[in-house]
Length: 200
Image 1 (cartoon, rainbow, N blue to C red):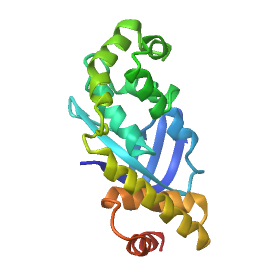
Image 2: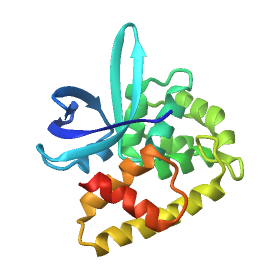
Image 3: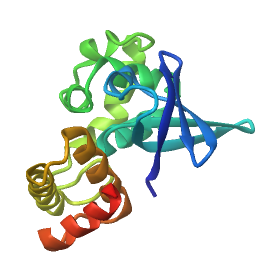
Image 4: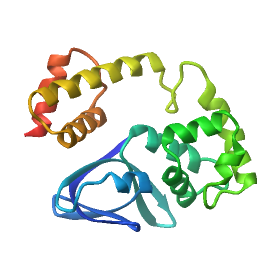
């Protein structure tokens, strides 16, 4: 099950960010690509979350896209790759670029990422390339055809919200929140009504 966190941004920096959710502060670590796109402190943020529990310590890792979260979870499943190394990978390459490098067996590009040597790059390729190349299957094991339909609905939904006067940032947050709550399917009118409730 995919975690999701939405609240007011208190602090952001290279050490991560702090999000206030109903008076409770959550410290979240995130790749540089996510940190760079965050709004100013005081504004609301919404992130896909991976909860990492180890040695009685709980760490939260946040991502702006579901794909970024899934790729992070794939990476930490590889022997020798921990959360810090996975964050480094997603800080230096966009999820799509990282995925292509793995599929094409580009160990040279992967080994340019700080903390990832040649052997680790080769291990990532061996462990993940086959799963990512399976036709019709996405990283989470779902078939791609329904996802393409969902993306088309999301694009139509975003255009409708912009037509109603909502700003790009508001639209992106609302659509991300809706995607985390339910599958994007059905008719656009119903989806629009559900998203408008999230914007109130």
